Image (cartoon, rainbow, N blue to C red):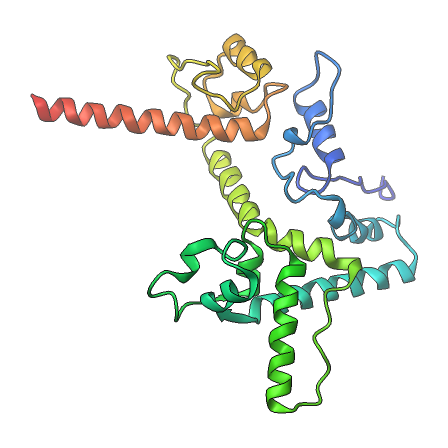
Amino acid sequence: GENAPIPFVLGRDEAYIGVLIDDLVTKGATEPYRMFTSRAEYRISLRADNADLRLTRKGAEYGLVTDPERLAALDMRETLITDNVERLRTFKLFVTDWAKRGGNDLMGGAAANRPGREGHKKSAEEILGMPNVSLKDVEQIMADVFEEEKEATESEIDSLDPTPSSVYDTVEASVKYKSYVVRQEKDIESWRKAQGAKIPPTIIYDHAIMPTFSKEEIEKLNRFRPSTFAEASQISGLTPQSIVYLYHHVMRLNKESRQKSREAEAAR
Protein backbone atom coordinates (compact mmCIF):
# COMPACT_ATOMS: atom_id res chain seq x y z
CA GLY A 1 0.00 0.00 0.00
CA GLU A 2 0.91 3.67 0.09
CA ASN A 3 2.32 3.37 3.61
CA ALA A 4 4.48 0.34 2.90
CA PRO A 5 7.89 0.74 4.55
CA ILE A 6 10.85 1.58 2.35
CA PRO A 7 13.32 -1.31 2.41
CA PHE A 8 16.64 -0.62 4.09
CA VAL A 9 19.23 -1.84 1.60
CA LEU A 10 22.98 -1.89 2.14
CA GLY A 11 25.09 -2.32 -1.00
CA ARG A 12 28.21 -4.41 -1.42
CA ASP A 13 30.22 -1.17 -1.27
CA GLU A 14 28.62 -0.06 2.01
CA ALA A 15 28.88 -2.96 4.47
CA TYR A 16 29.90 -6.59 4.82
CA ILE A 17 26.30 -7.51 5.57
CA GLY A 18 25.48 -6.10 2.12
CA VAL A 19 28.01 -8.50 0.62
CA LEU A 20 26.61 -11.42 2.64
CA ILE A 21 22.98 -10.77 1.66
CA ASP A 22 23.82 -10.17 -2.01
CA ASP A 23 25.86 -13.38 -2.20
CA LEU A 24 23.14 -15.49 -0.59
CA VAL A 25 20.35 -13.98 -2.69
CA THR A 26 22.09 -13.98 -6.08
CA LYS A 27 24.35 -17.04 -5.75
CA GLY A 28 22.75 -19.17 -3.07
CA ALA A 29 24.77 -21.52 -0.90
CA THR A 30 25.28 -25.26 -1.18
CA GLU A 31 27.41 -25.31 1.96
CA PRO A 32 27.76 -23.18 5.13
CA TYR A 33 28.48 -19.57 4.15
CA ARG A 34 31.50 -17.95 5.75
CA MET A 35 31.94 -14.17 5.58
CA PHE A 36 35.53 -13.78 4.46
CA THR A 37 36.84 -10.30 3.68
CA SER A 38 38.01 -11.70 0.33
CA ARG A 39 34.35 -11.99 -0.74
CA ALA A 40 34.08 -8.18 -0.75
CA GLU A 41 35.44 -6.38 -3.79
CA TYR A 42 35.33 -3.10 -1.82
CA ARG A 43 37.04 -4.50 1.29
CA ILE A 44 39.69 -1.74 1.31
CA SER A 45 36.89 0.76 1.91
CA LEU A 46 34.99 -1.40 4.41
CA ARG A 47 37.12 -0.66 7.45
CA ALA A 48 36.26 -0.50 11.15
CA ASP A 49 37.60 3.06 11.41
CA ASN A 50 35.13 4.45 8.85
CA ALA A 51 32.00 2.45 9.78
CA ASP A 52 30.31 5.55 11.19
CA LEU A 53 31.10 7.56 8.05
CA ARG A 54 29.59 4.86 5.85
CA LEU A 55 26.48 4.01 7.83
CA THR A 56 25.37 6.69 10.31
CA ARG A 57 23.77 9.05 7.77
CA LYS A 58 22.00 6.16 6.06
CA GLY A 59 20.71 5.07 9.46
CA ALA A 60 19.44 8.61 10.04
CA GLU A 61 17.61 8.61 6.68
CA TYR A 62 15.63 5.56 7.79
CA GLY A 63 14.97 6.82 11.31
CA LEU A 64 17.38 4.38 12.95
CA VAL A 65 19.71 7.11 14.20
CA THR A 66 17.87 9.97 15.86
CA ASP A 67 20.27 11.29 18.50
CA PRO A 68 21.19 14.87 17.45
CA GLU A 69 24.41 14.72 19.47
CA ARG A 70 25.53 11.62 17.56
CA LEU A 71 24.84 13.32 14.23
CA ALA A 72 26.62 16.48 15.39
CA ALA A 73 29.61 14.34 16.43
CA LEU A 74 29.65 12.79 12.96
CA ASP A 75 29.64 16.25 11.35
CA MET A 76 32.57 17.25 13.54
CA ARG A 77 34.47 14.05 12.73
CA GLU A 78 33.95 14.50 8.98
CA THR A 79 35.18 18.09 9.20
CA LEU A 80 38.27 17.06 11.18
CA ILE A 81 39.12 14.32 8.67
CA THR A 82 38.67 16.65 5.68
CA ASP A 83 40.70 19.45 7.26
CA ASN A 84 43.58 17.19 8.31
CA VAL A 85 43.81 15.44 4.93
CA GLU A 86 43.74 18.84 3.20
CA ARG A 87 46.56 20.03 5.49
CA LEU A 88 48.66 17.05 4.40
CA ARG A 89 47.83 17.74 0.76
CA THR A 90 48.88 21.39 0.85
CA PHE A 91 52.09 21.01 2.90
CA LYS A 92 55.04 20.49 0.56
CA LEU A 93 58.80 20.12 0.91
CA PHE A 94 61.59 19.31 -1.49
CA VAL A 95 62.19 15.56 -1.71
CA THR A 96 65.73 16.05 -0.42
CA ASP A 97 64.37 17.92 2.62
CA TRP A 98 61.97 15.08 3.43
CA ALA A 99 64.87 12.62 3.19
CA LYS A 100 67.16 14.77 5.35
CA ARG A 101 64.56 15.25 8.06
CA GLY A 102 63.04 11.78 8.05
CA GLY A 103 65.95 9.65 6.94
CA ASN A 104 66.60 8.10 3.54
CA ASP A 105 65.19 4.71 4.48
CA LEU A 106 61.95 6.22 5.70
CA MET A 107 61.42 8.83 3.01
CA GLY A 108 62.16 7.00 -0.23
CA GLY A 109 65.63 5.57 0.17
CA ALA A 110 68.63 6.60 -1.87
CA ALA A 111 66.33 7.60 -4.75
CA ALA A 112 65.43 10.74 -2.81
CA ASN A 113 68.97 12.07 -3.30
CA ARG A 114 69.41 11.20 -6.96
CA PRO A 115 70.83 14.04 -9.10
CA GLY A 116 68.05 16.23 -10.41
CA ARG A 117 65.72 15.61 -7.46
CA GLU A 118 66.76 18.80 -5.68
CA GLY A 119 64.01 20.84 -7.29
CA HIS A 120 61.27 18.23 -6.94
CA LYS A 121 58.65 18.70 -4.24
CA LYS A 122 56.27 16.24 -2.63
CA SER A 123 53.29 16.86 -0.39
CA ALA A 124 52.92 15.36 3.07
CA GLU A 125 50.04 13.33 1.64
CA GLU A 126 52.33 11.78 -0.98
CA ILE A 127 55.01 11.02 1.62
CA LEU A 128 52.47 9.37 3.93
CA GLY A 129 51.42 7.13 1.06
CA MET A 130 54.90 5.56 1.04
CA PRO A 131 55.64 2.28 2.86
CA ASN A 132 56.85 2.45 6.48
CA VAL A 133 55.89 6.12 6.86
CA SER A 134 53.35 6.88 9.60
CA LEU A 135 51.17 9.93 10.08
CA LYS A 136 53.12 10.62 13.27
CA ASP A 137 56.41 10.71 11.29
CA VAL A 138 55.03 13.16 8.76
CA GLU A 139 53.37 15.45 11.28
CA GLN A 140 56.55 15.61 13.38
CA ILE A 141 58.44 16.95 10.36
CA MET A 142 55.60 19.37 9.60
CA ALA A 143 55.68 20.63 13.20
CA ASP A 144 59.47 21.07 13.09
CA VAL A 145 59.28 23.10 9.87
CA PHE A 146 56.42 25.14 11.32
CA GLU A 147 58.44 25.95 14.44
CA GLU A 148 61.52 26.90 12.39
CA GLU A 149 59.47 29.27 10.23
CA LYS A 150 57.80 30.66 13.35
CA GLU A 151 61.20 31.45 14.93
CA ALA A 152 62.59 32.88 11.70
CA THR A 153 59.68 35.30 11.32
CA GLU A 154 59.22 35.86 15.07
CA SER A 155 55.53 35.13 14.55
CA GLU A 156 53.02 34.79 17.39
CA ILE A 157 50.91 32.13 15.65
CA ASP A 158 50.10 28.89 17.46
CA SER A 159 52.08 25.70 17.00
CA LEU A 160 50.96 22.99 14.60
CA ASP A 161 48.68 20.58 16.45
CA PRO A 162 48.82 16.87 15.58
CA THR A 163 45.79 15.09 14.15
CA PRO A 164 43.33 14.34 17.01
CA SER A 165 43.30 10.71 18.17
CA SER A 166 39.57 10.48 17.33
CA VAL A 167 40.33 10.71 13.59
CA TYR A 168 44.00 9.64 13.48
CA ASP A 169 43.39 6.11 12.16
CA THR A 170 40.90 7.28 9.52
CA VAL A 171 43.12 10.10 8.25
CA GLU A 172 46.12 7.78 8.02
CA ALA A 173 44.16 4.94 6.39
CA SER A 174 42.38 7.17 3.87
CA VAL A 175 45.73 8.50 2.64
CA LYS A 176 47.56 5.14 2.82
CA TYR A 177 44.86 3.30 0.88
CA LYS A 178 44.00 6.09 -1.57
CA SER A 179 45.88 4.63 -4.56
CA TYR A 180 44.58 1.13 -3.78
CA VAL A 181 40.98 2.38 -3.67
CA VAL A 182 41.42 4.08 -7.05
CA ARG A 183 42.87 0.88 -8.52
CA GLN A 184 40.12 -1.17 -6.88
CA GLU A 185 37.44 1.00 -8.49
CA LYS A 186 39.20 0.79 -11.86
CA ASP A 187 39.46 -3.02 -11.72
CA ILE A 188 35.83 -3.50 -10.68
CA GLU A 189 34.63 -1.11 -13.39
CA SER A 190 36.70 -2.97 -16.00
CA TRP A 191 35.17 -6.36 -15.38
CA ARG A 192 31.67 -4.93 -14.94
CA LYS A 193 31.85 -3.49 -18.44
CA ALA A 194 33.13 -6.80 -19.74
CA GLN A 195 30.66 -9.18 -18.08
CA GLY A 196 29.36 -10.22 -21.49
CA ALA A 197 32.88 -10.92 -22.75
CA LYS A 198 33.64 -14.53 -23.62
CA ILE A 199 35.96 -16.77 -21.65
CA PRO A 200 37.86 -19.07 -24.06
CA PRO A 201 36.56 -22.66 -23.76
CA THR A 202 40.15 -23.91 -23.96
CA ILE A 203 41.29 -21.96 -20.89
CA ILE A 204 43.20 -24.04 -18.35
CA TYR A 205 42.28 -23.60 -14.72
CA ASP A 206 45.31 -24.65 -12.73
CA HIS A 207 46.83 -23.32 -9.51
CA ALA A 208 50.27 -23.18 -11.14
CA ILE A 209 48.88 -20.75 -13.75
CA MET A 210 46.57 -18.88 -11.36
CA PRO A 211 48.42 -18.87 -8.01
CA THR A 212 46.12 -16.31 -6.39
CA PHE A 213 43.10 -18.64 -6.73
CA SER A 214 42.16 -20.95 -3.89
CA LYS A 215 41.88 -24.70 -4.44
CA GLU A 216 38.10 -24.39 -4.07
CA GLU A 217 37.90 -21.70 -6.77
CA ILE A 218 39.98 -23.74 -9.23
CA GLU A 219 37.74 -26.78 -8.62
CA LYS A 220 34.56 -24.78 -9.21
CA LEU A 221 35.87 -23.14 -12.38
CA ASN A 222 36.79 -26.55 -13.76
CA ARG A 223 33.40 -27.96 -12.77
CA PHE A 224 31.21 -25.17 -14.19
CA ARG A 225 33.44 -23.93 -17.05
CA PRO A 226 31.72 -20.50 -17.34
CA SER A 227 31.57 -19.13 -20.88
CA THR A 228 31.28 -15.45 -19.87
CA PHE A 229 32.34 -13.31 -16.93
CA ALA A 230 28.67 -12.80 -16.05
CA GLU A 231 28.38 -16.57 -15.55
CA ALA A 232 31.63 -16.66 -13.58
CA SER A 233 30.38 -13.95 -11.23
CA GLN A 234 27.39 -16.12 -10.31
CA ILE A 235 29.52 -19.03 -9.08
CA SER A 236 29.23 -19.30 -5.30
CA GLY A 237 32.63 -19.18 -3.63
CA LEU A 238 34.38 -17.31 -6.44
CA THR A 239 35.48 -13.97 -5.01
CA PRO A 240 35.18 -10.68 -6.93
CA GLN A 241 38.96 -10.24 -6.73
CA SER A 242 39.45 -13.62 -8.39
CA ILE A 243 37.04 -12.67 -11.17
CA VAL A 244 39.06 -9.48 -11.75
CA TYR A 245 42.24 -11.58 -11.89
CA LEU A 246 40.52 -13.99 -14.31
CA TYR A 247 39.50 -11.03 -16.48
CA HIS A 248 43.08 -9.75 -16.69
CA HIS A 249 44.32 -13.31 -17.37
CA VAL A 250 41.87 -13.76 -20.26
CA MET A 251 42.71 -10.32 -21.68
CA ARG A 252 46.40 -11.29 -21.59
CA LEU A 253 45.68 -14.59 -23.34
CA ASN A 254 43.67 -12.79 -26.03
CA LYS A 255 46.48 -10.29 -26.54
CA GLU A 256 49.04 -13.08 -26.88
CA SER A 257 46.75 -14.90 -29.33
CA ARG A 258 46.40 -11.79 -31.50
CA GLN A 259 50.15 -11.27 -31.41
CA LYS A 260 50.79 -14.84 -32.59
CA SER A 261 48.25 -14.41 -35.38
CA ARG A 262 49.98 -11.25 -36.61
CA GLU A 263 53.37 -12.98 -36.49
CA ALA A 264 51.99 -15.92 -38.43
CA GLU A 265 50.52 -13.58 -41.06
CA ALA A 266 53.83 -11.76 -41.37
CA ALA A 267 55.73 -15.03 -41.80
CA ARG A 268 53.64 -16.09 -44.83
